[in-house]
Every structure is written in C-alpha cells, then in structure tokens.
Amino acid sequence: MTARARRGCVAIAAALAVTALAGGGDPRVARAQDEAALRGPEAFASIADRTQRSIALFVEAGKVFQHPRCRNCHAGDDRARQRDEGLPHQPAVRRGADGFGAPGLRCPACHQEANYDAVGMPGIAGWNLAPASMGLRGLPLSGICTQLKDPDQNGSRSIDDLVTHVRNDSLVIWAWAPGQGRRPPPGTHAAFAALIRAWAETGAECPRVP
Ligand code: HEC
Ligand code: HEC
Image (cartoon, rainbow, N blue to C red; front, side, top):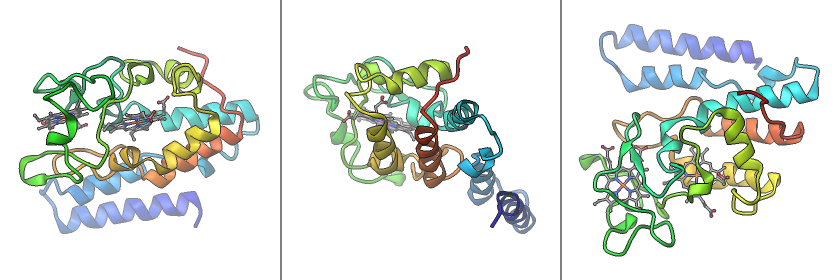
C-alpha cells in the first residue's frame, strides 16, 4: 500500500468511527488520529539530499522523543514527572543510586509488571528513571539529537545500539500501551523504530537549529 493510500485508510477508519460513535470522546477515534500523526520513513524518500533526509527523519521522530510518555522518565534530573504537563511526581520520588528509587520508596513497590488500570497506575517490569544525562525534557530537537549521539551521555551506546534500544526496549514499547487515561505518543512503535533506523542509515544527522 502506498503511504497516501494508507493515510486514506486511516482517515476513513477515523471517519467511520466518528459516525458510529458520535459524541463519545472514544479512545479508538483518538488512536486512529494519533496513528496518522507520525509519518513512516517512506514519506521522506523523495528528499534527494541524504543529510536533509536524515534531518527530516529525526525531526519526525522528535514528535515521540518530546512526548510526555518518554519525557516524564527522561527528566534530565533525578526526579520523575507525571501527566502530560510534566508535573513533579507525587510522592516526590528520587532516582536513587541505581535508578529504581531511594531506599524505602522504590519504583517497583508501586509500578508493577503491568499497568493497573483500576487505580491508574502505569507499570511494566524494570520501571526506573533514566539517568540525568539522558534527559529529553525541555530540550530542543537539536539538543536531544546531540544527547542521543554522545557516548558520554547515552550510556556508551553506538548509533546501532540506539537503533536496537528503540526497537526492543520494553520501557520504550510500553509508551504505546500506557494504560487507561494516558495518551500514547503519535503513530505506532513500529513506525518510530523504522524512522530511527532510517535516520541511522542516512548518517544520523542532527538538526542544526535551534
Ligand atoms: C508510592 C507509589 C509510587 C512510587 C514509589 C513511584 N511511583 Fe511513579 N507513579 C505513581 C502513580 C500513582 C502514578 C500515576 C500518576 C498519574 O498519572 O496521575 C505514577 C506515575 C509515574 C510516571 C508518569 C508516567 C506517565 O507518563 O504518565 C513516571 C514517569 C513515574 N511514575 C516514575 C517513577 C519512578 C522512576 C519511580 C522510582 C524512582 C516511581 N515512579 C516511584 C506512584 C508511584
Ligand atoms: C519508565 C521509564 C522510561 C520510559 C517510560 C522511557 N524510558 Fe527511555 N530509558 C529509561 C532508562 C532507565 C534508560 C537507561 C537504560 C540503560 O542505560 O540501561 C533509558 C534509555 C533510553 C535511551 C538510550 C539512551 C539515551 O541517550 O537516551 C533511549 C534512546 C530511550 N531511552 C528512548 C526512550 C523513548 C523514545 C521513550 C518513549 C517512547 C522512552 N525512552 C521511555 C527509562 C524510560
């Protein structure tokens, strides 16, 4: 299917859902709209200049990197954030020595191996806070790109390691199934992973400004 046909399908699916469930604020409608909101790598194939194509792929992927589901755990300091607004986490948990919280207020005590929708508690195995050096919150896309590529900040990862992390990491994948009442990032995890792979294959170029 071409990208245009696929966008058409998504639009039709969204329109049908609206007709069938008018007046609802139905999550399926929101999901269909969100999925249309992240273009896959094929949408950038017509950009002939390799550097410009790489930058355009990263800018598209930036819709995910700057999303609250990622940002709240990549806070750039030692405190988790909550909600789309990035409010300070209640209670005021700290990262602690290993990312899993200070003694007595450990992340897995509350964040279990799956979302617990009855109380609005997000969770998946291995829930912990990203180191301050891996911050996404409050950075422009150029700064996020520099952070991701810098082995001194990214946990000594190569570009290939980043591609693998984004494709396989369970915390990344969780963002697209974040539990009731939480908005996933736009698009699908597969489209995001494909964008990062294509970005790597085109030289992993960073936007220059701002
Ligand atoms: C005492 C229980 C408790 C502990 C301990 C705890 N959390 Fe939370 N956390 C919550 C609750 C409840 C929410 C949901 C708040 C909401 O969305 O209104 C939450 C939400 C979050 C979110 C927001 C997810 C999102 O994007 O919606 C992040 C990130 C987070 N916690 C990280 C952590 C980290 C990292 C730790 C350990 C350092 C931790 N939490 C420890 C109770 C806890
Ligand atoms: C529950 C918290 C949590 C969530 C949610 C989360 N991450 Fe992470 N992320 C981490 C932790 C912790 C690490 C460090 C893991 C390590 O180095 O072994 C990390 C590392 C990374 C890295 C590699 C290092 C770097 O420079 O950033 C990338 C890339 C990344 N995450 C992307 C994302 C994206 C994209 C999302 C959202 C789709 C996301 N993460 C959501 C906790 C989280």
